[in-house]
Image (cartoon, rainbow, N blue to C red; front, side, top):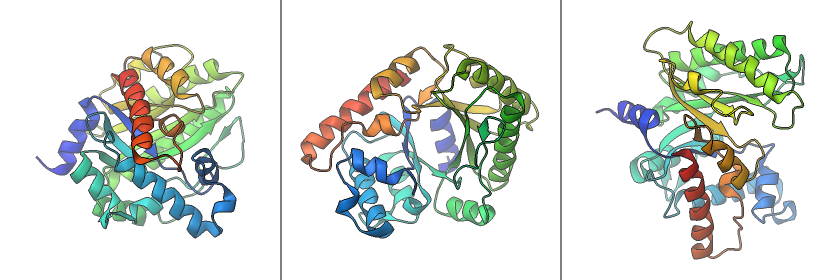
Length: 296
């Protein structure tokens, strides 16, 4: 079986969750601060990204970070070009840990219009996708945000996500579409109903044999996305924690039987740079186990 087919099978039916290790420039200082590395501890972007890479490497090399419970991991573009123990990160993930590598490809968000924030333009996307495929990346992730239940905005955000997905599919990769619904939205439930209907409409237009994944905010109504998870064009539906704590996100996930986790903050909650390797491994292992149990 080819690596791509083996990865596809793991993403479709593997037991476990997808780790989101794709903090980008904007979210890196906060992620580092939660880890106990303050802005005063580094100087400039190069040192900041080096500190973030050290944190990611520590997670990836931890005893519990294997395909036993973690079936996929989403990487930041800079991480894809980096190495851990002199091995390209995507290669190490798949060959040494049995974890399917994905790449975050979005360049951030536009200002809000019609209650949503669309993806910013992604110049050089085809070249990036070709590079990713050559490095053993299986799929991509692209995040935009819905802040209000605005029918035009939701329709626009889903249409844009599927436009990008077609480019990703043409490059031989599997896209994770991520139209996040803001957990603080006063019209969250209504927005989620709109989103579900729009996604289903676009899925029905995809050609047979085309695979996509969906990364969605844990819905107010448990099971709302069960129909999407069962759609023949959908490989898997994963859930984002969206700012919920590990406990709250895991509890909400447990009520959505056809979603698995793809958590970032909830995965790294409680980790600290000053922990011994044993303390770090125990804390991370506890988070991994909690998220894994909610995902299965």
